[in-house]
Structures are given as structure tokens and as C-alpha cells.
Length: 211
Ligand SMILES: *[C@@H]1O[C@H](CO)[C@@H](O)[C@H](O)[C@H]1NC(C)=O
Image (cartoon, rainbow, N blue to C red; front, side):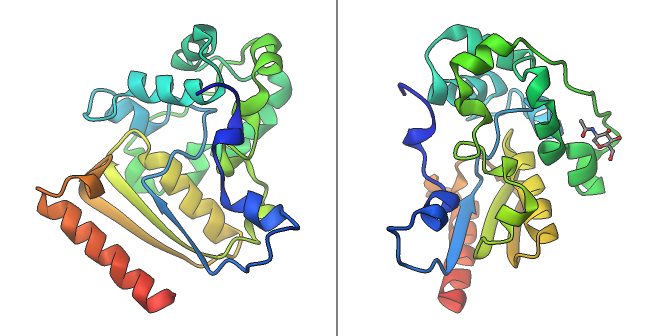
């Protein structure tokens, strides 16, 4: 990864591009990474050491979308990378209000510690909606097509997906959510596990009903 969010493409870029004439029918998000603002979500806490994606490895991959400069990775590990002038963005990734009760399990929401503006000036990508679809406001989310989301219980990225389901539903978009209770990051690639087949079949059934 070299620089910034151009490496990623999300639904908004297709919706906002005047040269794209096709009308999107559905979007599917498979245990997705949807934000790099709050690295202290309950799913990051609970699954910090769960293979194949530990918290530290996840943070490294996310930070390397924006830069190989280790200072961003380090600030993200301490969850101190968002500057005060961007603190309003935390409302869009506030797990205290966006997670269903059973996933909060008595955990406490820590208000984020704010960091220096310098990192954000140098690497603004991590605050960009193109890299973090959860940072879209409700008006923007409202334009999304029919949505399918897979989340897995034992996955640092679980709460990204769960918060996205809440936000997109609140914005009036139809969402089918498959939460895999015994799932972990990457299950669709593990063909030796039944759980991968099961999840894949559920998804293919949904596609054939909705395309
Ligand atoms: C997050 O949500 C909680 C509860 O809804 C609220 O008390 C808190 O102020 C919010 N924090 C941020 C940063 O939005």
C-alpha cells in the first residue's frame, strides 16, 4: 500500500460518479472493515488475539492503506490518532449507541482520546469516507441499494459490520444481515470447514432471490 484511499472502491464512488450509468441493485459486505477511527470497539477488545486477524495485525493493515509511516500505526494502536477538529465523526462510529445490547455485554464506552492534528494533515485518508464508509451521513447512506452484510462473532471487524447494519437500516435502506455466531474472519476462504460452506450457501441463496 502506498498512499491513501484510492486503493479502495466503495459503493459511494459508483453512486457519485457521473460516468457510471448502471443502477446498482445490491451491495454485499463480507465481514468488512468500515472505519479506522475507533480501534477500541468491543470486538477489537474481545478478539484482540483471535486468529487469523489479531488487533495489532488489523491495525497494521488498516494503517498501511494510508501510509507505511509507523507513526500512524502506533497512534492507532493507542487509539489516539483522531484530532480534535474531527471528533464530531465519532458520532458515526459510536458503538455505545449503535451496537445491539447483546454485543455490548456490560462493556464501558471510553470517550476517545484525541490526537495531534499533524498525523491527520499528513494522512487525511483515514478520515475520508471513501476509506471509511461508516463516516457517511444518513442522507448519503439513504441512497445505498439493497444491502447484504455478513458479520462473524470472533472477529475484530465484527462491530464495524454491526454498526453499519444499524446505521444503514436507520437511514431507511433494506438490509439482510447474517451474523455467524461461530464464525471468524475469513470463513468463506476455509473450504475445509462446514461453516464456510454454510455461510456461502446462505449468501448464494440470498443473491439468487434478490438479483
Ligand atoms: C456515544 O453515545 C453515548 C450513548 O448514546 C453518549 O452518551 C456519548 O456522548 C456518545 N459519544 C460520542 C463521542 O458521540
